[in-house]
Length: 632
Image (cartoon, rainbow, N blue to C red; front, top):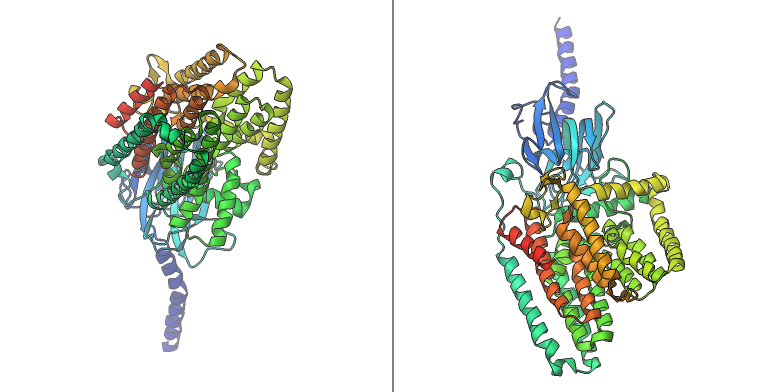
């Protein structure tokens, strides 16, 4: 009896020794609290907070339900009634420079629109993690590997429908989430950065309860300083015989110094200014995906990527350099590296201004115009601070318009194709080329230009779409990009910032007409106004191509729908080139005006986005919108 009892006890102990470690590892391994949404009420699951890009029950419904679960008795549900980015969020304590496996189960009921589908969000990270828009009525498992930054001690995870800058309608269920710390990343894994300075543990309901206050003092001070700088050059330097008659070799010496100072200033801003971390993380993630998977698998279904292939080649090179230099994720060196294309593009554009205006206006004025561009706060905030690629795109767009203005039609068409491959916004300027071709009846050049342009476009796009939809895949990408952001204004301080809150649905009406229709009307207005000036007086004088381009972008930005805060950027350099060609000083005044409104629009928006909110209809927004209308 004793022997049998002892044997039974030993057997039980052995079983416990075998089972308990497994149970313990699982419990300690999942860093999420309430990972299956089992605890708490239907509207407030324990340890999770509700967060929506567009708040209100008319926009999205987030709750906990028992009818559809993966395991247990409850699961989370998100229903975006209108295009939105909604999520249940939980913050997790983390260890710097560590790897985490993030996983969960998702069941999609429906989605509508071109935005990112249901996903396990890394809060503050623009992309890189998997998403799904159709699970065929079944629960689907998603998993990815993330890495914290060198000083990061926490990160957020969300059960999410939609993504940053990627809004979607639909309904999805979420259950059995897990975050597990790893000793190392699995071999061949596509690791994304979890580091985002834009996120704080206070994200969620507190954001809606306590609106973020952004002080405009610094922004207005910089605007005033640039206005003084402009006034001194405009009223003193440009009218000074002593300065304007200096030998060319004097300005040649100062040219290198000015460009060097502009570069150092941008490096300093790039390292110290808080850019829009979501965009930077997205660029870094896209570049790493290019390195890991190559172009053929980049545009996989469910992966958020709204850029055409052109800039992805640059991101691929940057990611390869990052690997060679060993930059850690989230470091200042990594951020500066990914800002370098825009920073260097600023300098190229400044030098191009100098060279073009030197021939027509003299070296002194050329030097002054270059300074006005290189030290323009609207240019600095876009590239060195925000980290966007607008200056890189603008090189190809400007050279295309320059080619049209100088009757280099084939070159113009090729450069336009490259600009379109980088950003679809190049299509706004299509009438500039079409008018130039028409006025000079350059049908042969049009044919060669179209052949070469489309050929280069197809050659660079082919690696991405050869086995991924082909021509249909390319068309679908541009259609989804152009149809995204179905809102009156996406943080653009224009006409629609005065009529309704920004981010108003295109289906809402103003003066009895839907915003969707207003957008279409003003595209026609922009083309009609551009045609009026193109066909007015000397049609064969193509030097007014810069002015026609400026007309198009200003009308579309100020009166068009779906405009982002940065879309006015090309107007700055087009103002300068219009002045260079016409010598009409009114265009310098327009340059100052658009420089100030563009800087305030971008700087004010950036301050709000880094607080995870959008600008409201306050005095800064309204005055800037009115100023843009007046400048138009």
